[in-house]
Length: 443
Image (cartoon, rainbow, N blue to C red; front, side, top):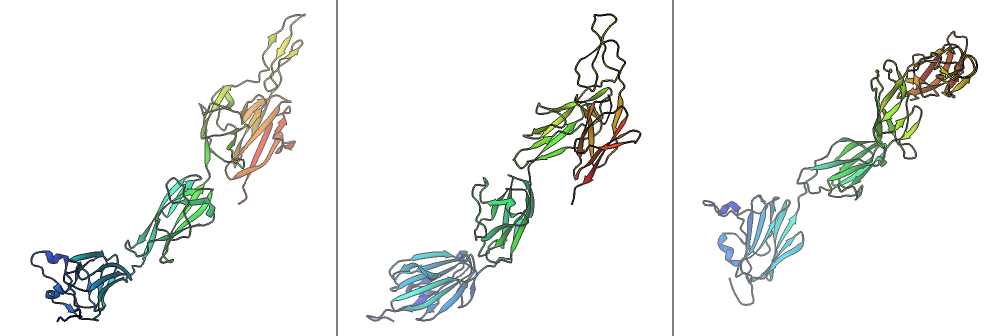
């Protein structure tokens, strides 16, 4: 039907499966309101009448296009009206009726609706609106538990299900007993702090230990706050380990952990030797793997793990000292070097009988160990000492215990003395037993 001043509008719609191009297949027309799950072609123009689907003015047709379907809009020649395609209300293509075989191809990223209608004698519009939302069904976080030291890092990766969820953005947060123990970053170098409690599409983050403590890292779906996952992160302080080498002795000494003090230093107070000395030997000092000598009771700053090797020396027997002749005068003079004293040479005129030495020993103890030492540096759990010599006691509490008391007692039990604060006493002319007790730390 044609006459001057009047434009004849016709909109022919055909939907063709991609497989229709294969031998034996034919064009397929879809009824209004039907779900379309295969790739389709929509033709607009008078030359399409032979496709068998003519639409008259103001007829509204609507079809649902499934996600992934490719839609091709064809404007055929000889169509003398304008045609505009809208996606979500925005014009994306417009043809005049004299554009020959123009095409616009669009792939549905999610379920959508195609509407064509509302055209007049001067134009024809096709509307396409995305309508479907794929909900988030769950979220996981790998790993769900992690441990690190201060300064260490841990990669955390979130997975949002399903993979085609409409909104896969998430929000990250840090909580728990010690939220400040962990900081989250978006880069492996940990230079870009992550925006917390903000919707982002970052699904892999890097947790860095910033302080000792326990923190919980949580990732939550931005689309559905009921979908979340967490990772419990434990951050430990950096410690150095001191291990002990018996170097020919026997027994066992457990490694000691040294932590950073309030001044940021790793200070180790040298423990007494808990090994039994080799036959005929007595403990002298510790030789460190870092080349330094470590003396019992001394405090040293550590810069890393070390091993202390026990150094032994010949045991001195309390036999009265070394006799030397000095000559001169009638008879002879003797000079004595008394073990356990100050090792200075003492001039004695005439003959001096050997000095009597007495035994001092440690009683059995629980919750720690201890050692006896003299000003000469000798130490052990039992030794012979001359009267008036100062004897030092070096207590060493085991983990979870603290020193309670140090008491020395005459062997006959006639007197006892508390030396907890001084940790030393003057040897009497009698055998002595030293009692060292420890008590558990308060819980």
